[in-house]
Image (cartoon, rainbow, N blue to C red; front, side, top):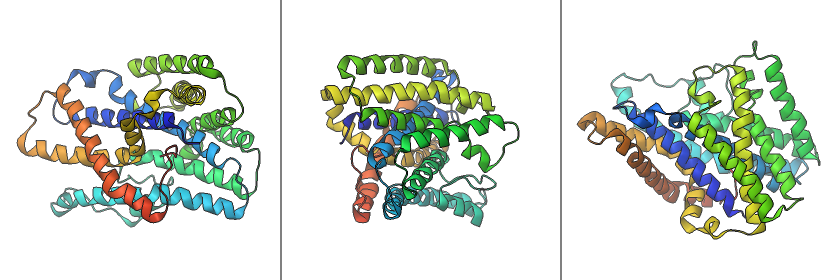
Length: 358
């Protein structure tokens, strides 16, 4: 079942991330009012929360009934060819833009361990810096995929229940040992994993219950209100704090994850009950299809814009430049989707259905 509402949410989440990074880049050149309000980071943070909930929902809906060794390997291969090759291209293009700084000895060439961490796309000892700063979220995606792969491999049938136990236990261990954990263990016990679990619960309920239009709106509207509150106040935004304490990360997972889960649940149940026309708008579907490219490629566009300003100087008011830069980045990412991601997926036989996760 293809869900256009998921495409709408994917498009919004990607645009949220782009806009936050546009605000962040402007700090290199000038300061406007948008850089002084919580939305400067909260938009992008909330976008990632929505992505995580969507991933939990879609993976459960598409693979929740799979069992067996052969099927588990097929699941893993599909996830790899869908996620990693496009990511590798974006990493390669990013490294190419670093060549002038290598030549001028302004940037140190990446070591073997750093490059290996880019290839593996999992938490790595020493936490080497990634080529794509936004690539951190893919580490959590792959952790969730590996857990799901394990459940398919050992033929677990009640995956929703087992995922509640496994992911809940990891997050609980993270809280119990919050003062002593370090390195990769911080990733494997991060409460952000609970956002995937929220998506799994939505997927489980989706297959067994239809609340109708009124019921869907009763879920969606509180999610929108809560989402607006956290966006405008920045309450619990762990991305806005350097080295956030464990308590803040758990607060974030509960409040921001719940807002994202209510919005995702409300949208999918609303489409299930009445399928509003705006879910099917072709530009929304295009942005949803291209959301992974937008997520991966937009910082490369921002880098080119920054290089231009370093040569000629900023010639626009900062609060006007921010949305213009975001629009240019989205447009450039659509070209990347058209010329790179879509042909690559077709070549690999991994053309994504509309509801597939990032």
